[in-house]
Image (tube, rainbow, N blue to C red; front, side, top):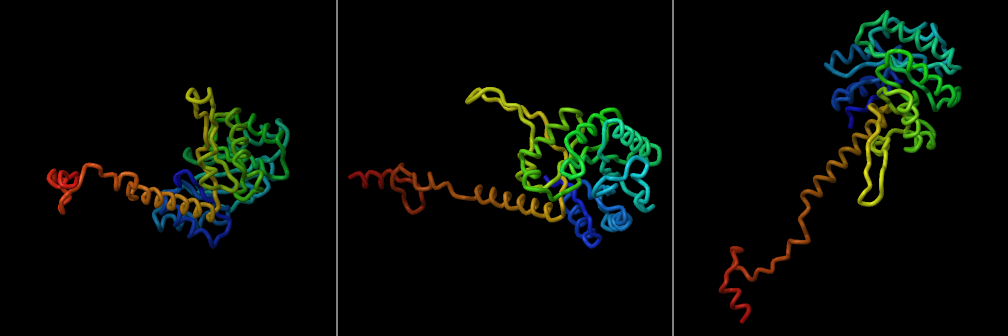
Length: 275
């Protein structure tokens, strides 16, 4: 599962630890604040990491609009492999203006392999459902981004982080646009395993489940990623233990008669026992 987890790093002192974790566990990407991109790129080359380094843009509130999104970013942030851009809330006309500009900007000034990822921020206080709907409708009008991320927050309220809430935002996105989705918020292995869109037909023996969609990535803090790794390890140990456990149901179920000291059944011994 860790090959679908991506780690957010906000603190410079966590960069080495997070990148070491990503390298050791084949994590596909680490998301870094703009000021730390250069440190992350340098350290990745030292450890020969294969993961991508993604730059946060206009976090944590997404209030810089249109051409101001990339203004003020340090030049070193241009070394990132991609950008997770927190969109600005607003009506559809305002939204399409920003999204088209950002898409064209990345296409014009960066390499063809640079990823553009849009972040909806559906758990933030400065936007509502109508803002999220407008963002999704506008994203349909441009070349598809690499990912749509649900929110930039890895720690959210228990209601926003519940499995039902995660499925709800996943369904909202997938109904509008068929694009890879990255969900975020209180991520655990249980949520990652159960966050799926499933169509159920019939009941009982006639019941049939069809998978309609699931997230392609999961955003985590470093602590959440480490907890998922621990859960995976515990599950693996449990499976090994179950495989090695003796079958108590058949261990003493030997009705074929007495045996000699070698364990071979002896008809003579059996006859003697019957007498």
